[in-house]
Image 1 (cartoon, helix red, strand yellow):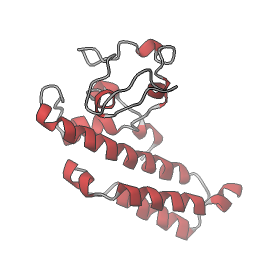
Image 2: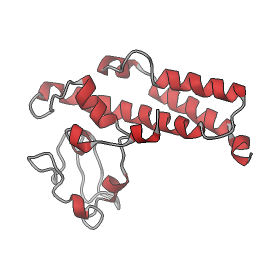
Image 3: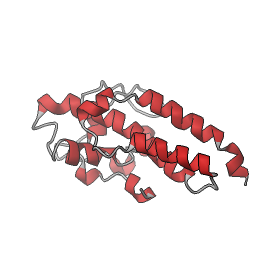
Length: 170
């Protein structure tokens, strides 16, 4: 994978992040939103009505957020281009898939960046093993994501990255 593979393509998504996730009123978000409720700034056309002024409008959390390309994968590959508005019975499965796949993609991006370090053979093999766990030959499905131990995978990647501290100094 290349780093550009982790870029979100909002045009190929259906604003899953603007609907599926909850947020609390804070410095990051201007109001409380429940998971599954569309953001009040999400237009009927699926575009953010304040995108050009998110930070000034109290939505710095949106500016900082990245799905690492998970949104377009969930919509286009897992749900074959279907939209949560037109298929409300699948909406929760789409939100759940985004929540897990975003974390998977984040870990893959970190492992991709670790590949730029001078790794010894054992470190390279462990990196490859972790990548294979997060990017299996069989494509992700909503069911496979539900069963996947994402917390365990995040812990394994974190431990691996911590073990590379001497590689960074080389």
